[in-house]
Length: 111
Length: 120
Image (cartoon, rainbow over all chains, first blue to last red; front, side):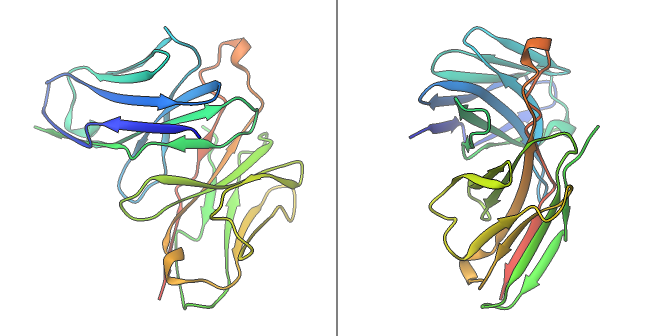
């Protein structure tokens, strides 16, 4: 069974203080690893998909990396508007297979 | 940017009543899904739908649940007799055929903004 573990559960940063969020996973054949942002009471908002170990993707202050066992979401010089819950999910092989999510990491960035 | 649209945003229903949650997936997507998130918990898979039939379902998706694509645009989730424990956010999602080879960043696995279902 696919499993996703995210750590830490919550992270408080000062504005400008860079950090990384961790996602460890086990999956029977990885089709893709997804990162989403979720604001309170809203749906997951797509950030990145990573397909294979060694791949990296960047978007503004966010950079996602992937190894065979884990993924990191690096946040460089965060701003208060980056405060949200960040969700990691894996999809095993199969064109329309489900996503298995972790519990998420709640990030709070203080001005 | 294309969106997945869900209605209503909030539904309150009495225990034992039937509810229908509605979704309009992204127009050129072929795969449709329902997920739910109980307050404070993980997003959980319920069901996937392709070519007018269920392709995968979770243990949560029992006989009280059903899905339908009644026309070319809508995708619905019906709960026949709601229980208190059905209270959750329900998310619809859709995805398309991968265009990874063309360097696109994702499969288009896009979620709607959700319907908050409260069973009283």
